[in-house]
Image (cartoon, rainbow, N blue to C red; front, top):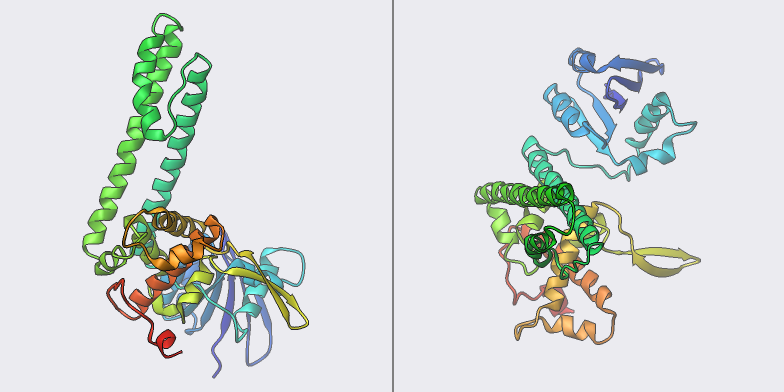
Length: 343
């Protein structure tokens, strides 16, 4: 007996299902309200359920998996080529049903609640950092209108604001001065909220031996290590370090025809947040002035632009992360690949 394959298009309230009865060949299309979805699949024989990796997909993957079904998540960009008509819920569900049966299709690993919790901390911290930066830049520009030139850098600039406000007393209106003080207080609250999130990530790190191993890699700190583990989970889902680097968008785009292939800039596909963390860490490694700096970096800097070297180091860091987690190893700065040595 063949396993029934379902294409499920998720939504906030009304879901769309598409499946084919293998015995009769009848095509089924069904709309189901959110509160009825679990009940529907609880009364069906275990099958294969495919969904786009969109909002709430990981939650439903866990819930439907508990009912005995096999669940596969597909990136939305891989579903789109199989949508035959205009974009509707029914067409999307049919496209998902079609895409999951492709033998070369790539799937998204289902995240656990713990992974999603850690990523939620990262997303909230990222938002707070963006708002804090906007607030500092706004205050810098507004104070400049009153003749105050704050030094470059967030920490240096914020440190000078109280003195600048004290110098402006009697020169500007009390209501403006009071508002500036309130904004400065809000910046302190942002700093405290960001620090609190980082403390929670540090506490989570204590129970994760893999985080400690990753933080031994140059350019990998608490944020990068915890974000990698929360996003990827089982690193063995990637066959090689290059696959992980490709997943993060740190490999060149390719354009070719007639057997001639040109390498372009990096693809920038995948998780932009992880890619930015790795790139910032790589920039710190490349810019580091140390006697023990990797000669590979200096050799690359002698013939390539600075930003190219930074991205190359980020790519190398991603491959190192894969090797440590997929093969359960400790970081060794003097490690030499046996494959390269034999070649």
